[in-house]
Every structure is written in structure tokens, then in C-alpha cells.
Image (tube, rainbow, N blue to C red; front, side):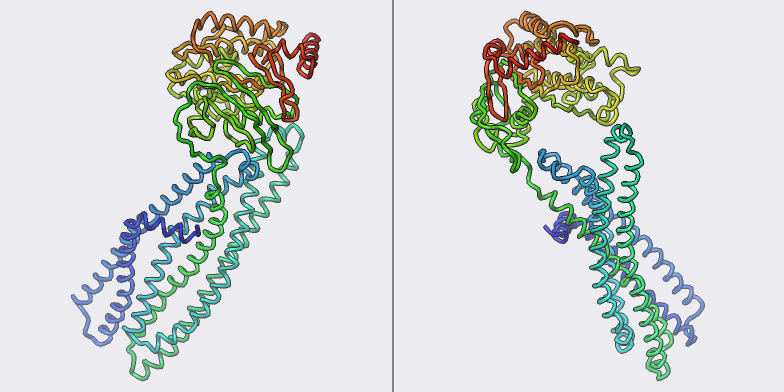
Length: 628
């Protein structure tokens, strides 16, 4: 879609606002071209002695009234037209935001956050100006030009008009050359601004790293270079825009000289009165606005075209995953991966022929060395990517048959690097359930072993976490994210239980806190029929005092306690990805991924008897723990 097609479609949808503004502009143009004619008639009347007294006062009153009406009409069409243009900016930003929320990791690997922010601000503003100021200036200038030229040629003297308009074709040629420079200049300016914006975003996000490595001077120097490049590109674009004014001034000066020479000769011959020459000169002065408007409109259009060339590819980028499913809810059932393979681009396969079945109410542990494909497996389950080979089925239906919103609502996910919003701790925990009570928030915080940490803050649960949770430690952020996921499970009290996904979510906590969290999670996974999350202990401390205890004993105690509390209630499904084998040792099924393949499979005891990677890693981690 071109910029012209975009604006044409927008004008068609909001034709009433543009029609009303056009009528007001037409009234302004009529009054504007009437004024010089009336002034010329008054001058001839005064010169001939036929105008005076009450008639003169009446004519002056008409001129004043026309000026007041012009003022009111100009204010009216500006309100109408700019309000419509602002709606276009709102629509574009909404479309851009919705498109960005539908994109997957691959899109953000190719696009930088700062650049996307620049497109949502500067580029949308440029398109908005094209639909607003450029549209009104173009319409007003064109209408004024047509009426003024008509009055000059038909109402006064066509010969004088022809001579006065001789320089204007040269101005049009100059405008064509300048507009090409304006387009290129604004394209460079928008690109340089995006680069500067990206640098600022990255530096502010990583300010701790910058300070820790003593890179403040280098970062400032880099910013200075990028800001200088952006300023130079903007100056170049403005310099091209400034070239319009000399072209207009030179054209009108030449036209005025030709008008006075030709007009004086016609007055001497008696073929033109002094009043008519005065009116003609005033009309020529009115051509200043159409000439400037032409330059301004061309500048705004070229700026808008450069901005739209950056926006359009983002708006046309198809979603990473097609949301064509029809199933609106996810029933309780097994999760099956059938010979699933996946590779990132041209890289080696991250997963190769992975097959596994997770029965409802059971826990699957996924372990393996770094880069084995564990997180990729989680991404495929959430449909952030689609497998290139094989199939993933949930409750008997392939994942693409579910609506994305329904599918992702069935998973309570805690990623490796949990993201916290710039809000209070309570608001971050209640993200999926804003209506949750404080008691519910505190209960899941206890289950995640973060309640005591929160109470140590002066504002408790109302403590702002800062951007990306900068106020909290890595372990605290992980535990807040776990609490959020557990509360999200509770949000579906009347539905089938979701699947809890823990993607190495305990990596930043000590082993004692890990054991405490696992104890609570086992109880939570055995939630009651009403969806209430049941913990091993609502008042457990988060101080890591159990660091020396064996994690498996904690988990086992939690499992039995949870079973007693839940009775015959339906168990919840969990998939736990972890580098610490203690986090998965009580799972009904554990798989070991190596180089994207499942190399070992079984329970904890079965894998120890196999004496493979899992057994060696277990012995190493137990030895490491005993030496602490």
C-alpha cells in the first residue's frame, strides 16, 4: 500500500470531517479573493469622488466583517482537519502495536527495539502531518491559486496575468529538484534518529553493565557520534526544505517586476485603472501562500513517503504464527510430541525427532547440557515457533487447531529471564488476575518462597520494582514470576487446570530456597477441585535456612503433604526444565536432551541405574552440594 492509498482510504472513512473542513476552506478562499476586488473598487470610487460618507463606512465595515469571518472559518477548518489527522496517528500506532504483539522471537531478532520505537513516534508523526497539514495546505493553496488566477485573468486583465505567471513554470522545475533532495534528506534523518534512539535504549537498559565496566566515556562518545550524525542528517533535510523559500521569493519578485512594468504601460494607455492595477497587485501578493503551500506540501509529502517506507514493511509483516485455529478452549488431556524437529534458520537443528507424551496430572522433567534444546522445546509448546517436522498435540488436537489466546492461556509459563513491569510487586504478581485479593497474592508469594523477602521492603507489596524489576535481585525476580504463574493457574478455577511451565526458573536461587519452593509447588500442583492452590506451608520462611537439607526429601514431603491436602482432587500438569537435577528428581518422567535428541528417558531411579549423563551429573551435583 502506498502513502497515497493509505490517506485516500482514511479520507474516505472520515469524509464528513474533511468535507466540512473543505467547505470552510472554500468560504475562506471566496472571501480572500473578494477582498482585493472590493479594495480596488473602493480606490477607484475614492479617486472618482463617487465613494464617501456612509457608503465608505459601509464598505469598510464589510471588509472588517469579512476579516472576522475568515478568522473564524480558518479556526474551524483547522479543528476539523487536525482532529481527523490525529485519528490517523492513533489508528497507525494502534495497528503497529497490535502487529508487534503478534510477532515472535525471530522478528525481534531482526528488529531493534529503539528502531521500532522511532517508527512508532517520529515516523507516525510524519505520516500524520501528511494527512493533516499537507492535505489542508494542498487543498487551501490549490483552491486559492485557482480562484486568484481566475480573478486575475477573467476579472481584470488576461494579458497582465499571462505576463505575471511567466516565472511560475521555472518555480515548478525548482520544486521538483528540491523535492528529491528533501525525500532523501528526510529518509537519512529518520534512519539516523532510529540509530540514536536504539543506542540510548540499549545504554539505559544496560546501564549497570556500562558502569561496572567503566564504559561511561565510551558510551557518551558513541552517543555523541550518533547524535551528531542525526543532527547533520536533519540539518541536511532542513537545508533542502529551506531551498523552497528562495525559489518562491525569486519567482514572486520577478512576477511583481513584470506586473508593474506591464501594468504601468497599460495604465498609461488607459486600458487599466489604478484601482484595477492595485487589485491585481494584491492578487499577486495572494499567490505567495499557494507558492509557499506548494513547497510545504511537497516537503511534507516527501517526509511522509520516507516515513511510510519504514512503517509499511512492519505493518505488512505477517504474524510469526498463523492464528487460524477454531478451538476456543483447551480440555484436559495428554500433551504429545511426535518426532518433532526444529532449526533456527540455516543453523543446525535445535531439536531432532523428539517424541514424548505427558499424561494429565503428571510432571515431566527436561534436563541436559547447555544448548541441548530445552528452551526451544518450551518455545514450541507455546507456539512461539512452529516445528518444521513432526507434530505437537494437546488433548488429542494439533496445536494449530487451537486459538493462540486459548492455547497460551492454558500454560502458566515462567521463563529463564522473567520480565517484570514497572509497577508494584503486587501488581506484577496479579498481572493475569488484576482482580485478585491481597490474600490470594500473599498465598502464592508464600508458595514461591518470596513473601518474607517482600515484607522486608519498606513498602512491602506496594514496592515499585522499577524498569525490568531492577529493584529486585535475580532470585527475587524469578520467585515473583513463579508466584505470578501460580496465581494465573488459580485464575482458571472453573476450568481444566493449565500446564505449569518452568523454564530453568530456579537457577538464581540457592538450594535451600529451591527445596522450599519445590515443596510448595508439589502441593500447588495437587490443587483442589475449586482451583485453590494448596501449599506445603503458608508461613514458610524464605531465608534459605534449609540449604543443607537434601532437596529430594523436601520434594517428597511436599508431595505427600500435597496429596493428603488435595485428597482425590485433580492434579495439575507440570513441565520443569532445569539444570539442577534436584528440581526434577520427583517427576514421573524425565528426559535428557543432548544435541537436540532424547538420549535418556525414565524416572530418577531408572536414570541412575542407566549410569549415563544423568547419573554422572547427579553425582557431580551431589558432591558439589556436600562441599558447600
